[in-house]
Image (cartoon, rainbow, N blue to C red; front, side, top):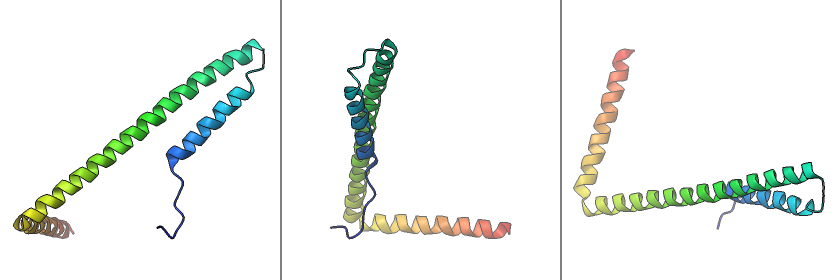
Length: 108
């Protein structure tokens, strides 16, 4: 359990906004003015497009998160099965950082 407040989920905020706009459109359905009707139709179309975009972005974010978790789990299991590979990768990383540090120190 978290002991600090978490920021609201952006998707939830957008869903609240979209539902509020939809409720507003439902409340002005009784108006008979043709210009208002045209604006209502345009707004409803924009609302439908926004809902589709939010659903698409949410699905894409969930898929990306799943790929990252799967990749992390695969790397973890690979390195646990091959501890010498983990040591070798760490050594390569340290050598690369050392070379970059030496190169940047030589420039000064």
